[in-house]
Image (cartoon, rainbow, N blue to C red; front, side, top):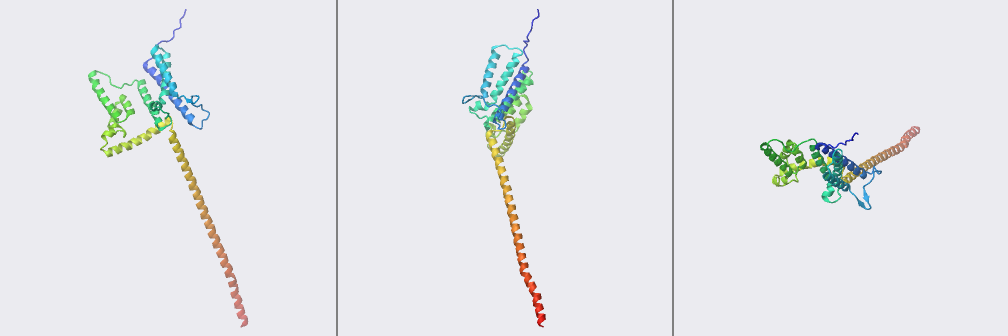
Length: 305
């Protein structure tokens, strides 16, 4: 009698990491898109947040529950294919829900649509970058004999420490796996609010001013990219709306002033033309009797003679 055999193979670690990354990115894209649609007045039919009475249940809660459940099952059982992949996807979904509100559990206040909420997008970018390096099989340190590896690791960690002191955290993460990035970041100027800048640029005003200009330029680019992914903070949207309304009001006022000026100029021109015509007509009327009296006087003088 035949026997049905269910696959019980252990999947490769990088395969599990890929499934986890897929669940993580999928949940983040879904929940962030959902939040943006809820905020948009153009999509009133999109369902709102999960509530219980007056209590708003953040999706961070569902993420923590998934993380705890999948972590417990991963330790308490010995899952095989396909359960390992399923647990990995669910763990990734929980991580996506949780990190999407990273700014909330960092500050313990709802800053999802505030300027501080951009930290959530930055956390997701860092986690995604690290996960991608793991999936592709990148290693942070070289392999080989200890005599050759240890000096290289010490040098690399020293460069990473410089990046951290310069407040270049994302570049430090990439530099762990790609050495040239770490060296370039360590050589270039520090971030203006970093410990490195406070200690080493305090007596170098030109260098401090230069790093501030670069920092502001980089912040604008970074914020535009984060807003493209996560949405613009509410205060900035309101400021843009006010600015647009003010510009529209100014344009309307300028157009009205121009129309008024044009109308006034036209009225003035018409009045001037009318006055000129009236004056000409009056002069013509006054001159006509005089011209007619001169020949009559001449004829009378001729008759008397």
